[in-house]
Length: 173
Image 1 (cartoon, rainbow, N blue to C red):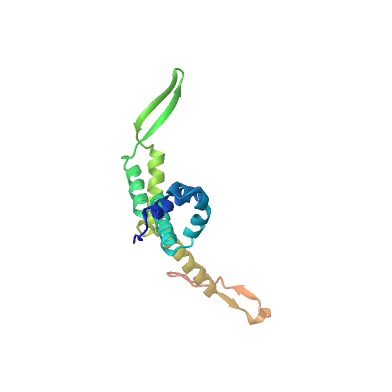
Image 2: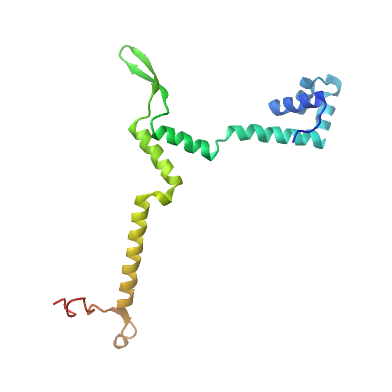
């Protein structure tokens, strides 16, 4: 939402955002040298001017930060080999500039890994690791069930190795 400012106030806002100095911004906006300091300071207390400075600063900052979809699009273009760069290569005859150089396989693999970090549910390696962790937890639980307190050993824990195996007796025969 743009605030209604006079032409001088609008110039003040633009100048203040650029230089960060209220006196200099007032001079740049056309205020006299005699009043620039007091007008600059006073302008920073006016709600419409403060809001205009805040809004325009936020607008400028938002253009400096990449959005998530921009990052994903760039990583995808690198992965697919669509992105190119200019590379300077030193040769015995001097420096050669290579334009529209496609990404290396290493760059493409890195882009792929970065993309997969954002979509972990589709990562087969992650799924395999999760299955292994679940299996390890099941094995640990089964072993814990085999451990029993032995009353003949003053409450010490002993491991029962005489667990019958499927298809054989307790000795594995």
